[in-house]
Image 1 (cartoon, rainbow, N blue to C red):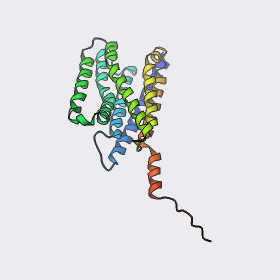
Image 2: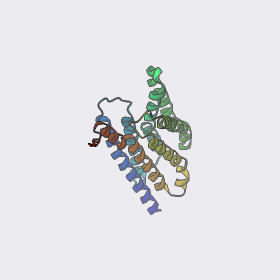
Image 3: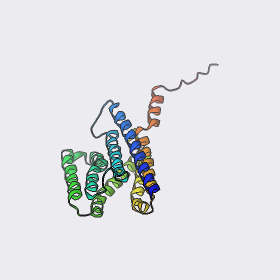
Image 4: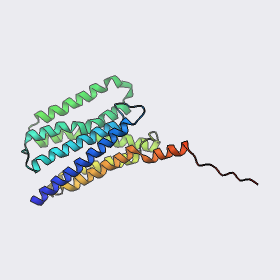
Amino acid sequence: MQIVLEVAAFSNIATAVLSAIISVYLFHLWRSQENRLLTDLPLMFGITFLTQAINNIILVLPIIGLIENSMTLFRFRSIVIIGTAFPMLVVLVTIWLPRIRRHHAKIIGLLATYWIVVALTAPTDQMIMMMHLPIIFALTIGMIVTFSITWKTGRLKEVRSELIVVSFLIGLLGQLFKVPLMNMGLDFVGHFITAFATILATLGLANPWYKQERADERHPEPVPVVTG
């Protein structure tokens, strides 16, 4: 039992550190852009991964005995997860609903209010998860569909949409198998899945291949001239 707890604590801490490092990198990537917007993908994903790191740290605290694993802690963690899920909502309404931009804040605020009310008032942790799950599922499917379209159409060349799609698919599978893995004492497998999905998403957002292609376009190799 002690070994299982140690593995769970280590996997949570490792995932938290990785997520924090990647979030800092994405924030730097966003700040290095010439034209920065609050809805830019690096910023949104940076917030998601930073909150993911905080969530993993919260999960560690009861395991190492610093605080009690209570319903109050679960409610608090549920509210923290807003920072993980809702940046995806910002991305989706920005891409799909540009004509009603003035209503974006209302849409986000309404769903955030629902999320917080459920987190604070639902009687059990199972009910909180059940009532939050449709939002998480809808946001995840929305991101998969969105980046699948940009992948097929090539409209968002500055990111590798296919890597982002794969990362969300892996993350979705991780969520679906989260409870069975926990029941089998294999929480660390879920954290490995999360870490792998996080790395893929970051690689897709950074897209070093695009930067190299742009550099090649600016500095093409000279064509040899054949003289007779």
